[in-house]
Amino acid sequence: MPIWMMDSEEIIKEVIEAGFVVILVAVRADLLGEEWLGRKIDERFVADLRGHDRSIDPCGENGEFHTLVLDCPIFKKKLKIARSEASKREGLWFLDVLEFEAEEK
Image 1 (tube, helix red, strand yellow):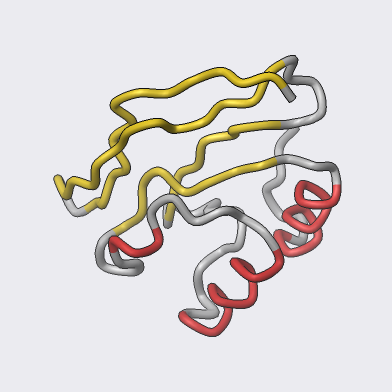
Image 2 (cartoon, one colour):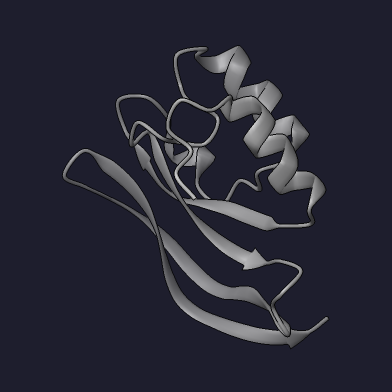
């Protein structure tokens, strides 16, 4: 579903309320630091993002960040990152997932 021109704060609220577990796996280094990697998108994330830089779209629709869905209502199992490391390349911080597990819900 295209979300262009929709209210990003409403969209992210719906995603959170629907039970999605989403984390940041890449962030633009000029906008967000390494400490944002692995952050779960929840109400606190949205508040912290607004406090950090109001120009950043809460859904990352302008390429500010990229995400990974660890769990959602239609997944039979949830993903758990067992081992990861941060790296910086080409102006982005990445959470490189080295090992993961699929766990029962």
